[in-house]
Image 1: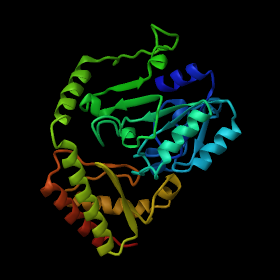
Image 2 (image 1 turned 60 degrees about the horizontal axis):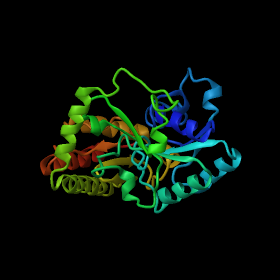
Image 3 (image 1 turned 120 degrees about the vertical axis):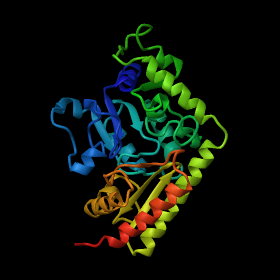
Image 4 (image 1 turned 90 degrees about the vertical axis):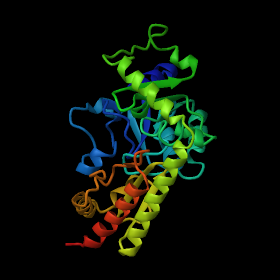
Length: 310
């Protein structure tokens, strides 16, 4: 909410552009084709959101610059910001195509809108810092953080250029406050977590473990003649069932959620608890060593072998 409020105040424009399948919290303006729970339950929007508010949110197709151009053409001079997960994880993990984020950044700047990178999931998870930094041509105006920076406790943060952040009260006219703002317990937990993540080899170990898991899941799919794919970005990954190439929400929706649910339960019976939705991400952590990864691969092979179309 704060990031959007800043963007609208800075530009004087009313509209927001988001991507189908990307999730940015459950504020009214962003519960429009938001992925994750909505995709699992087959609900595109939430009840209780006035049409007048939802109508200010345009929706583009992730990894499609043409659809972004169409939105800017449909609402010339009205879009305050483009908000994007650099690596979406709420339609399952969908890495950005080559140059997509950089070209999106240039396109957004060209139309006088702000680019907001939602790093609530990806920040300090894929690298020490923001994931967008892996895509050097991306140039966001605002960043959103959460999760890792609180060490698992409730927290949210907005970061950006001084001229934008100075719009926040009490320096500027954009109001922001909350019961948990600056909560010392969350902040302290986050500081200690970030200290751990600075230790040498942390991200290399995460990358290695996640790559091992992804390769093992791909092999299990092939060996059991199952249609599907594994998308991975750093320590985030998703095994999609029923679709060989997932690049956006549309292709994610074509996956076989019912078969995935059967696989989930068979994994659970074998002591492996993966996300219960086809559209959620697996999070590999530093607690997952070779033994845990290999056991997961073995269980996935068994679960896929036991799954049929009945």
